[in-house]
Length: 327
Image 1 (cartoon, rainbow, N blue to C red):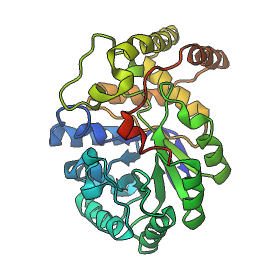
Image 2 (image 1 turned 90 degrees about the vertical axis):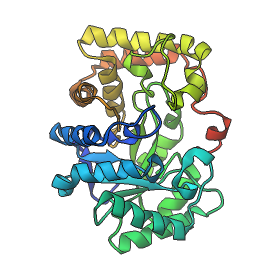
Image 3 (image 1 turned 90 degrees about the horizontal axis):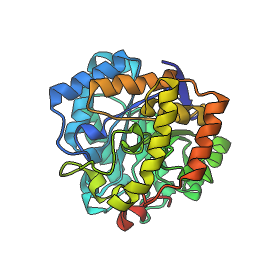
């Protein structure tokens, strides 16, 4: 697989990464440890060298990733995150105090069984802690060799600028796909200006762009989509039109809707690295195949017309979740 650079300080990763969240958090029952380890190793065999986890996904998530990549640790980059009070997003409470950042770094290193974190993100911006203090704390960890690069997640333009002035930001991670295009207006131009990479999470619209979700689909208990406005019945009826038209274009090209969705992201900027996740080997293989799909100018024109003609209905998160982004 081709590689891409995140930031300007040498973080080189595969064009597609692997998001580990769904292995143990957010999408119903957790994947068994041996199956998760095997899947992560299969991703590496397919050329993936960038793996994303977080304290917030539970200790097991980092532990599974650490075990999986141990045989080839020096060939991959591990990204993890800090920023939730007591390590859990369920309360919606944040904690990015410098002393807490240091504790999380040490705990993550232990769970990952590694001596460095390649990319350490603030998971959500904490309004009670100046971003300069956050960036300074990560800068200190970089100086100590515990962390290699600093990242932000779901941060707004001014926060990105302020953080970058203290410690260069290698990457911003936020939601971006044909289902969520919010970063295009303000965020992407600033990232390009500052030389910051972009790591879209949910690049398949939390599964919606795969064409496998329709108005009759039900999600298991514990699946975050049960509470997301754009996955509610009325919004899903409207949004189904987008998935159907992307699916028609994919069928005409002889590829899958998921592959079109990933190829579309990759063509937006050469410093964008999506991190699709899955629990199934066949979906992993399908996603990796998306890195080889070439969208023609005509394809891109058709997709632009589809996106312009079908506004996505429903907010990304519930009101509490929306308060935590773009700050």
